[in-house]
Image: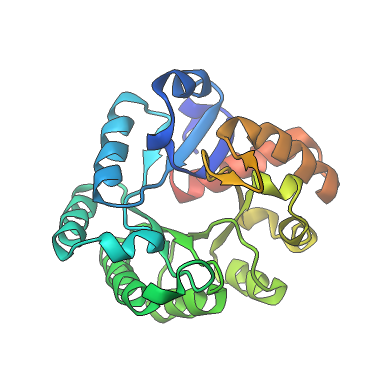
Length: 245
């Protein structure tokens, strides 16, 4: 474990490039963020941001919602940037049959390219799979990927168990505080394969999801799992350490 960090709160999926600098300054003492990107421009912003804020770890890629406006050149440039990263993380990438089914074929082609690159470079994958949990899981296993986070997991319980048995991580979003479909999966979680996230600054059901909400999520999870809050914080930090610190 990287003892330099101490035990901090983990946000394994936030669009940190969208946060104001002042807000990030307030977070850097108590949090570690895996900052995801949506396209070429935001990928560059994320990489620049991590040069200034060491508590943010970069993750770059093309979000499935942005596939329709992403050029081949943008994909090529992101691939080149990934190959230059010391500890590469690809995200947010994946498939979405729920919100953007009209671009599904293009999403599939792009994800397969990222999966090949992840296999080649050993990169971590930060995955979006709304309405396509089985499809993304099948692809990750087909490409023999070793490091992946299935973010804001709301898929089938049996699939979640299979993913964790295979060594992948499931992240619980702060939306679990009010989204029953999400929080209902907590009793089946493998503590060795769980992370916390905000997807900040995303707005969901009229509420802004933010990194600062992670402590409240941790408290809720500890209560639901009947575990000491400090112990759960330590476990989450160790999980993050194994994966991306």
